[in-house]
Image (cartoon, rainbow, N blue to C red; front, side):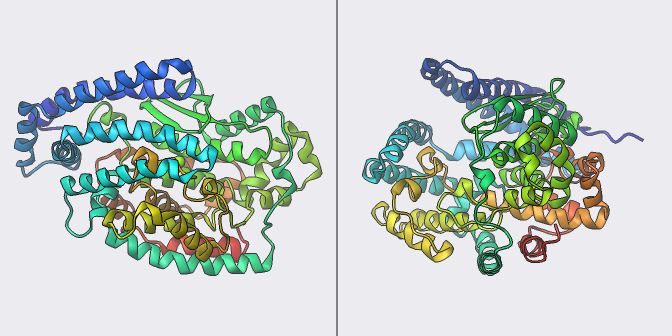
Amino acid sequence: MVALVFEKDLIKEINKYYRTLWAIGHAVSLMSWDTETYMPKEGAMERGMAYGELHVLAQKILLDEKFVSMVDKVAEIEDLNDYERGVVRVLKRAIRIAKALPPRLVKELARLSQEASVVWREAKAKDNYNMFKPYLEKIIKLTREKAEYLGYEEHPYDALIDLYEEGMRTRVLNRIFNILEPGIRRVLEKVLDEGYYPKKHPLEKKEYSKEALYEVNKKILKILGYPLGSRTRLDESAHPFTIGIGLRDVRITTRYEGYDFKRSLLGAIHEFGHALYELQIDEKLMATPIGTTVSLGIHESQSRFWENIIGRSRYFVEAIYPLLAEKLAFLKEYKPEDIYLYFNIVRPSLIRTEADEVTYNLHIILRYKLEKLMITGEIGVGDLPELWNDEMERLLGIRPKKYSEGILQDIHWSEAMIGYFPTYTLGNIISAQIRHHILNDLPEFYNKIHSLEFKEIREYLREKIHKWGSTYEPRELLRKSFGEEIEPSYFLKYLEEKYLSKKI
Ligand code: MG
């Protein structure tokens, strides 16, 4: 018997109405892709206007009285199936958020963040924190207001993290980071002591031909199972990203710096992980409120799973070595072991986006701590640079000498994205958690990687995570698929097995 996804007439009616919102989302995604790739520079102003208008239109459609009362009515039905309950949950949440925020605040934040990100770019280039400071101050003020309007039970930060990771709370994050911090520092100390994983490698400076690496990336994506051409694209952009325009149209971008080829290759594998999630959502959910990925943390767990757990493993590096050496001739003088070490450099560095697997989450711990202090008002923007530098020194033993390597390095705060950073760590943890479970359920996991057979791994991820779309909230999805909630100890276990036992 084929299980019906949507049975109730009222749900079917809601989904039909929702199609207009879906279509706006579809158009906006395509516009965003174009903005980041091929739009002529001077198109930005009108593009911004068009985004603003479409956003207002979407809000109007979402908050239509008849629609809202339909959603309220269907929420009262007791025998909804899981998919139907998912539709209600997703729509109720979207309506709650849209209703909570006064249009004045939404507009002000949108305008401010657009201005602030322009100023931030210049402030970073000139290494001038004072330029950015008044903007950051306003952003924090408005974000605190936003948290109050959204409401929370325990901590104002709860209201913000919840926007990016449904159901996540500050209390849970505190527990996670309290376990991670000492665990990571213990591993890091040993790794640096032993010196087996290098702090630098000659291949970081080695130049490559862009055409050759493009061929490598394409070949490897194909091996992983990326349906290039039929359902996907591969383009270039300054900041690599993935965008799901539809379940059969998912696009990734990469970047070619011209040296240090692992950045481009592992970046492509990272985006492949994001793309596969979008591609493997059940098509029965297409164009409905739950036919989308569920959260940033779950999304990032998919990219990190392919980039780090698979892409940076010995098994994978050994397996792709012949292909690499064929296309990038300079690699012939290096052994697979060298490439493995080059992929797994461990070096405390000032810049988050360049951080390795061991130190990465320490960068997030720093940002999380400062964000909480800003949101509760315990510190002002004047205190931030010193506090940033002190924390950096405490966590990683290095101190920024320039604002651009410290407080000014990330774009997120200028775009008023406060509460976003922890989702990177959630992704890292969940990727290690999935590794633990896949090893139980598919014991030949690493053998499969070694023989470059990824079908069963893709299927596993489809069954456990992808196909559900947003049917379950993140916490429930993990509980349903793995019988437990997010658990940071898996990440530490993974680090130890790799960096201390050197097995993977
Ligand atoms: Mg990512």
